[in-house]
Length: 171
Image (cartoon, rainbow, N blue to C red; front, side):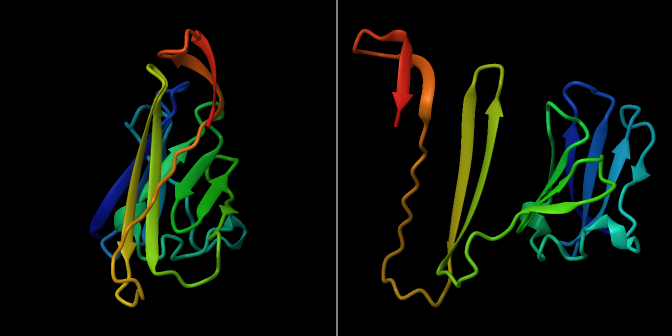
């Protein structure tokens, strides 16, 4: 069977624990595989015939080419997250799944926004990628998208003002 995308998650506290999310060429989830020995052996986690799994078919909504991502809680290797149209969470290494967050609004929109963020804990650098796609039926003659990144109650250095490293950012 052809595969379209692979999303991987490696535990920072247990580096031999690796998960791989496989997306078919139809952009739907094929399966998630787990390795406990650094990738030497892999076991599929999803039995699509298991009603108790809690994971419906088509959870990526045909957007596996974009959403085909898997994340692992760095503080708890039992917690897995599938990043799809909705957010799915497993607290038992993929045995059972629950929808952790769904669409914010159940209303039509003229723009589809995708946001992805990662943090480098070595240098505390946050990287945010934002993509906006406007639909053809938008009533606006010009298209613009304002993005605001907010931080609140974040202690860190401030240039100017004489605060040094003890500035409390409240934006």
